[in-house]
Image 1 (cartoon, helix red, strand yellow):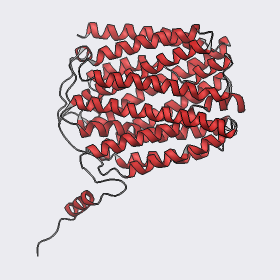
Image 2 (tube, one colour):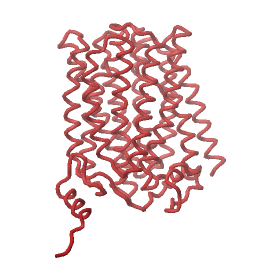
Image 3 (cartoon, helix red, strand yellow):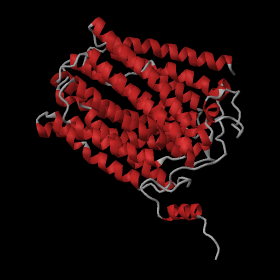
Length: 431
């Protein structure tokens, strides 16, 4: 009687009956990508139900200062992106994806429930950090898994990044609408609204557990995109098996692009600063979710436009257009003297984000190697985190020092101009 290989038996058994953590080493399918996108939709909806009214809750009910808001938002962003960084490296090391995604959605349920129990600065800071860590656990690996599913047709990989972001914005729109409706229904009782966020968070968890695949090992590299960004970083070469694990994620091409991304992040900060400016212009509590709704709709439109253009237009041009729109958004917010003008700025910020995000992810995907893809994304998120942390801390400090909610937007406009200059400089001198 021949002996049975237990490893082979376990692998085949996993493929037929995947556990909650998925079948090991199985390439993601289109079904898995769809489930991930649905998970993103409901996770975003749950987050926006809370974040769309959180600034009002912090300022009006807990009496936070602008500096405290900047501190919480800055360190929360840092926690999220560092969580992505560590998760991505662990995922590549152990060749697992789903276990982290499921853990992140579960932890998100826990954090959403605790939000309603916050009473002061320490509790808000702790639960915000926990919630962002949960986001970090799942977000990086969603991007890596989409890239795993399309190892050959890069343009379709880019297309699905934009589709993912479309659903992300759709969830944000629904979350803002639900938050606004619940504020009316509960008489502006923010904590009851926070509890309702548990429902979409639970649905997101169910979607994550239904994913059948976990990770795909492959030596096939993703080829870089053909455009100005690739001219800027033309020294990129196909990563070979002889390269070290970390060295693949720190190639000369990626290091240059990481540097560009770091500077870009200084022109960004939390939308809480936009709500604070609107509050100074007599924004009512129940009107706060409108900013999140309009922002999400405009970002949705920007993403929809980009998803059509990404198959035909160079990603660098999309980045340039996004940065120009961002500059005008900061300028409009700085000079705004009415809520209507500030809402125009909000629309421009949404368009900018919708165009920019997919382009950045598409370029990172094109420059990454299959076996270190999650690590590459995690480093991208870590670089982004550092920039956003410093940006939020700076914005909060400027508003506090100048006692003006407009100071942050002047800083954003200056950094936006600097980012455009550096991006152009890199392309011109590395072409």
